[in-house]
Image (cartoon, rainbow, N blue to C red; front, side, top):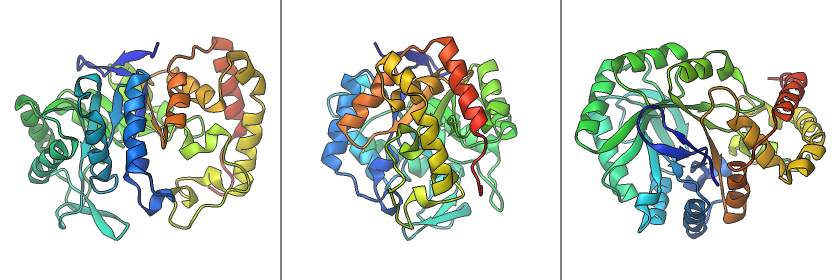
Length: 336
């Protein structure tokens, strides 16, 4: 049976393995464009496998991902915990410039007026009346750094109106997390974390554990690298996110070889548990102190079934410790 864990103090129970839908938004960032029909079937299969946590955002394909999720939820809304976000704005120049992606200039805006527009748009895209978990995608920053108090007041108003159930944050520093928590109830924090990127262990994970804040980790399979299926012969296009050496230094050939060798050394563990490398990695991630939920991108039903299996896998403490020892010994990526 799929392991379920609380989303902080929100009263919402969500599956330890969740579906991350960034890839379902398509675009040059991910190479091959997804098939929307297959994406819908995959999300529906996730619900059948016991995965009820589905995380999306307006920025994923400029609403495409949310619309796909909405299509998948028709007749199944009561089975899903729907998480989406606000704060990456493309309509005009409100906010602070963040990045240009696929020809659009994106601004970080947590202004109440843009949030009001975004929440209504997301509700329409998703075809639902209430969002279970509404997260700020990135914190506001200069030159237009909307005060956290203003943003949180807006979110609390949406909560009182019944448009959202719980409030979450994403990609914040510890001080930013503390400031949000001081202004209202924060149910969750979403951030990058994997066995190859363990920075949150220094501060964010201990804080969340102490304060009963749920954690939603992303990139925990490092865009597929930790499945062992990305061989040395795999080449990514210039716009593909995996060719970004800042975010994905482990994909550089010298580093990729080291990761593949590491994974090859766990053959006895995958045999012992009757699992794949992806399942082993996800199960390890899910039992790290402070981790409550692990988001995984899933392009098709085969990947979905494999990832779902990790939510039912129980690793022995000695094996968890051995894996950590191995990844610590691996060290940092060369050239990072």
